[in-house]
Image (cartoon, rainbow, N blue to C red; front, top):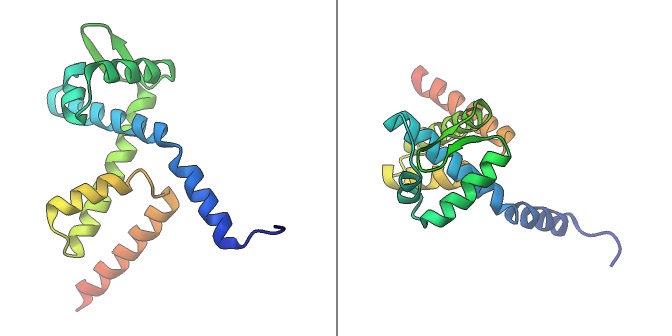
Length: 147
């Protein structure tokens, strides 16, 4: 077939990224733990299962995986908490979510829909794209303030 057209290369890359769903799932767990720690001060596996709508056995499996990667500290039958490394990721995801939520609200998107779409996009958009959206948002806000 020779040299692939750019669109096919982009399609291939997008599908490669989509296949990395395990890292997205990891981010969901880290985000849930981060938010639960802020809300409750502690986190039980059953809290994570409830928030994410998954079975307790799935939570246990993922927590063990995250512990091996150094993102959480897990005390069986007691608690799970983020390590500094995990908290850093949780904070980053939370900042992305907050920005996207505010961006969508500024566009006039209904709050529930904005929250759901921010939740989805926070995992897909690169830091570079988020920064460009932030720059656009700030320019628009500045223009709005001048009028």
